[in-house]
Amino acid sequence: MLLDILFLLLGLVLILWGASALTDGSSAIARRMGVSDLVVGLTVVSFGTSAPELTISVMSALNGSAGLAIGNVVGSNVFNICAIIGITALLRPVPVERSLMANEIPLVVLSSLVLLVMGCGVYLDGASSAVLTRVDGLILLLFFAVFMRYVFASAKSAPSAGAAGEGKAVMPVWKAVLFTVGGLAALIWGGDKFVDGASGLASRMGVSEAVIGLTIVAVGTSLPELATSVTAALKGRTGIAVGNVIGSNIFNVFMVLGASATVRELPFQGVGIVDLALLAVASVLFWLSGRVIGHNVITRGEGAVFVILYAAYMTWVVIGA
Image (spheres, rainbow, N blue to C red):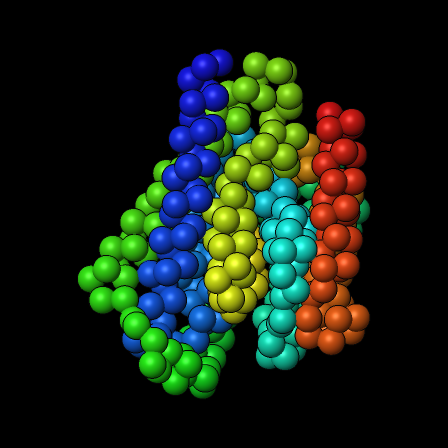
């Protein structure tokens, strides 16, 4: 018990430090390379902070723990939208670029809908149980390849960050690289230790594997995204804050679940239609809140709605455990 608590505390410290270092380092690299903060948030930051989900889901698939593998991704994506965007908006209203509303956020909605359709296979094709097959995994990986092609094509036409950074002290290259690599390492290791401690405590309480994946593991592996987005928003780097969540959600479904299902077919055990439908609804609300309601700004009021939605969902999961 004591070791689990120590893992929790150690993981939290590493995650908070890593988020700050990663934000500073990646922003400096973006300014030097003339790449926008948004592109950095959609790629290196979001993929780096999603490394815990990838590691845990693939290892869970190899060990036959399908509930943990899928629950981790679904729970993390719900947390990313409802908790991270919600908390970030409560701290500071989040402006969202028009291009995000037209291009990237619809991909988040698409990833959620694709996963919902795959989870409804038991109703669509008469199968005895819903399963994420290897074919499904390959389809998800194909979606991910298309997304990466789009990101790198967009990077060529993205506004240069160099002009914005003129007149400001820029971090030396060696220091920026050290901060970025060190921050990613701290985030990954910290997230791993946090999940170890949290899972150990949950197992002692007799909580099911799916519930652990949807709650403690999902929150633990999403702490890097939360810390990075909140830190970036407080520093005025809203491009990284929003891009991080968008990139992570797309990465989690298309790459993490795609790779996991390709390794071994994953039954949706313990992760039901309600969980998948809530993720789809949250994704649509994320898009509508900025595009229709907030006029390209996610306000504090909308942030509060996201946080309340997540609290209600967590209450439902825990009560139904």
